[in-house]
Image (cartoon, rainbow over all chains, first blue to last red; front, top):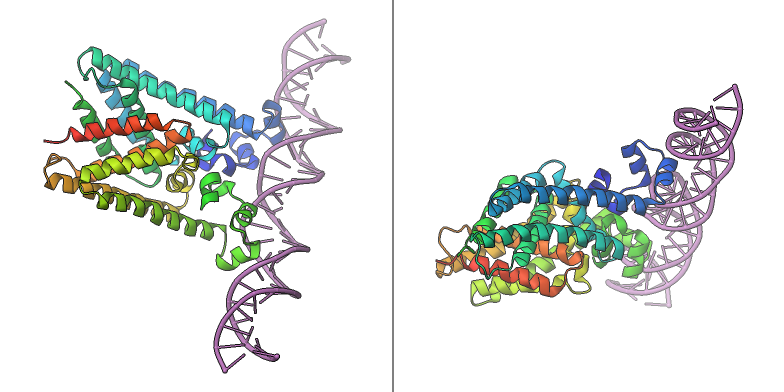
Length: 181
Length: 181
DNA sequence: ATTGTTGTTGACCGAACAGTCAAAAACAGG
DNA sequence: CCTGTTTTTGACTGTTCGGTCAACAACAAT
């Protein structure tokens, strides 16, 4: 998972995978029919882990909008960590393979849909408690948050500092908050 | 340029490049010292073309905020075109090589900085004409727009439809507009 | 201890990889 | 028309690619 995130699918060779896993060539091919299947398994694991993390952050928070703020701030922090500079495996995969591999594109789309639904749920709850205008569409604002997180990761990959990304997050939160009645 | 955008740096072989350019191997190596240099040239061309396009869109518009709206709507449209599904070469490169190749990362960062400055300029003009609150930071909102465009391209690469992305753009524009006094 | 099963290993394969080069072709200026 | 330079070409290099395989070790059940 880490290798694919660092080097991309095409950029990760079987030699790299044997080195990073400690397993020899044959063992890998005994467990998975080929490089692509191994990648799909890694992608599925990554998706479950990261999406689950966001879902938990959003559901744990007492205040739904505070949960959104916490989730976005975490992305800004994680994206600028040493590991995070390599981007999000889901987003990287969408860029590298999304337009060419239907099955992988569907996996990525499903993960993004879960993320969007998690954010949308928070905004929906915010509406019910009167923190957000009733005419705002939670799904669209949720998708806006997902797009923003992907954008943050791209900026981080190009070298942006955490401070800059946190400022962007605060600006976005401020704009969304103004959607309050 | 098109090949690198479709298949990524590692995924584009010299054979692919000879096929798509019509030039034979030796001619390419006569013009550029190697694959990386050829990629750098393609990346520079792409950056100038796309950044210049956005700069023109923002500078031509009579109303600065209308220019921003036009630029973002164009991204939503372009990202969902057949070609656009392969993402932005700058963003794809940031994800694939940004964290490992300092020179390329600097090129990408410079292009992003130009984009940010173009948007920031529009917001700055909007402030002067009273369309935007004076306490808003044009640079940060500009960066927010850049992040948003990258996020839109990622969503498009995962299969999102133009209608969905346009809705996100309108939501973002609505939020920014509420920054008006 | 002996089996049948499962997992591991390193050598091996043809194909594709980035990069090289001498010869031929195209072109320029006089 | 000739000559010196620049471009183009296709065959070639060594290396690395994803994938295969028979031999071997580990192990649980009898």
